[in-house]
Structures are given as structure tokens and as C-alpha cells.
View 1 (cartoon, rainbow, N blue to C red):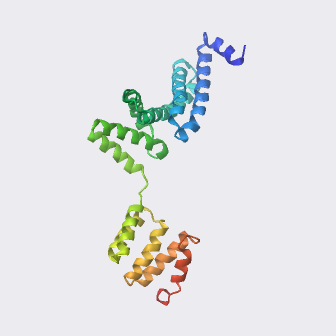
View 2: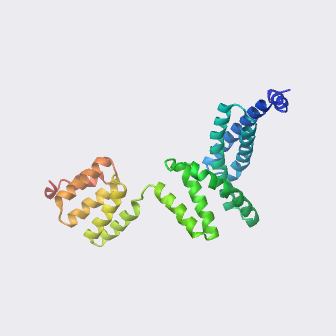
View 3: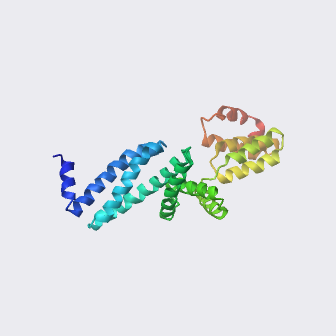
Length: 244
């Protein structure tokens, strides 16, 4: 008889042993699922997560030790979250509408449970949960719920300066320097270390005749990206007597 078989026999009459066995299964299955989930191989991760989820449920039901139970609660929270997201993702990828509906129906109540338990400071954990709930709400055409989940995503998603920068590029190409400067200022409000915006701002300030401001922008670009793509060009521009 293997050690695992021996533990299984003891677990039949000993709740503590049963809880420990279930906890071991939960940890093993979660460890199998982790790399699959991280690589977004949701279909292969799903059976491992289902086993881990059921195992931790058993652990919580049978454990009498408070420390063991507290550890199982923490583990269960993580497993439940990625299990719920995986159910949603596998459903989303399914061409079988019946299977998709079944997976989504199973996923949604779990997602709703883990949402308030996941702090907004834990962006990598919260983002897939909020995105899944938003997509499910969109499918039901529940605009109030869509708005609620979108608000969460907007709060936790880092501001993206790229759209404003791209508008500035277009404006600068048409010699609309004041407009370009406005877009660049918006981009830098979102990310004060967005180096390429300082490079373009240096060019725009020259177009506006603001040479001192241009110099400051170019120097900030070099501070952020001393060996960046535009560093050589910027160093040459800074040799212009107007920028001294």
C-alpha cells in the first residue's frame, strides 16, 4: 500500500486526515493548473482547477483545526477566482452555445463572489474578473452592470498616454503646433515619464518659437532615455545656438 493509499484509508474514518488529504489534492491540482492558466491555456487548466476547487471545499467542510481552515480559506479564494475566470474563458472560446451557456452560468456566481473579495490594488487578479463580468453583462444587455464593471476597469487600468500622443503626432505633421502641444500635455498628465512625448514636445515648442521650453523638453527626453531611439538626434538639435 502506498502512503497515499494509506492516507486514503485513514481518511475514511478520520475527518482530520480527510481534510489533510483533500488539501494535498487541492494544492497539487492548483500547482498543475497555475502554469496553464498563466499561459492562457484555459481548456487544459479547467479540469485541474475544478478538482482543486472541489478538494478545498472538502477541506473546509472537514477541517477542525482553525489554522488549517484559515489556510484553506485563503487557498480557496485564489482557486475560486481563477477557476471562475477559466470557466468564463473556456465558455467564450466554445463554439457550442449550449456548453458556453452552461460554463457561463457556472462562472458568473463565482465571479460575483470573488469580485468584492479582490482588492483594487491587486490589479492582475481583479482585471480578468471585472472584464469577464462586464462581458457577461453586455451579453444580457444589462447596461447598468456594464457601466458598473467598466468603472472598476477604468479605476484599475493605468492611464494610457498613447492615444493623446498619436493625436499630437498628427497635429504636428500638419503644423498645428498649439493643438499638438495640448495633446502632449494631456499625454504627460497620464504618464509624466512618457519619454517620446518630451521628444515631440521639444519639436513642437520649436514650432511655436519657445526655444527655452524646447530645450527643457529635449533634456527631459535624454534624462528618461539617454540611449533612446531619438537620443542622437536630440543631442544634435541641442547644439543649435537658439537652444543654448
